[in-house]
Length: 112
Length: 110
Figure (cartoon, helix red, strand yellow):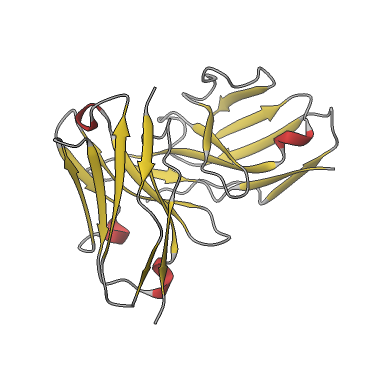
């Protein structure tokens, strides 16, 4: 059974960056295709990108190209999502997920 | 890029059957997945590969596929099934497959 535990809520100013972590247990992070999905308040789910362990490639949604970086620390089995040049529209709950198992979500608030 | 289209809302009485559709041009070629999301909670997978149920999901949840439309059916709806439901598939029109979600359907149990 995969368990995904995310870091706590963040408040950022416009233009800043945020880095959210996702600690994996039950498997090693390299065994999982880890996706990041976000959900703005009152809105639907929006896929951001994922890491494919089969070919070692990271695929980003075109919407976030140039602003989004997904990384993994194999020594701690932790995945990270970093989003830069934050705007108010980036205010959302960010989830790490294998699309079967989901983290609890991390609220990122962007406000001046 | 592709889109998945869902009705914004569906309402049914307890014990009735709810059907939630999801349409998209990628669906004849890619599997569909369905997620249930209750307020304040993370989504939960209820159907994968068009019509398979993960362990622990009640039998009243089923999925079907026909052409460009997939359907989530909840038979004998219970009050606890009131939630938002999202379909999901893959967009393989570009060089790298991207995941796409439908806009979501709010299921109201009257």
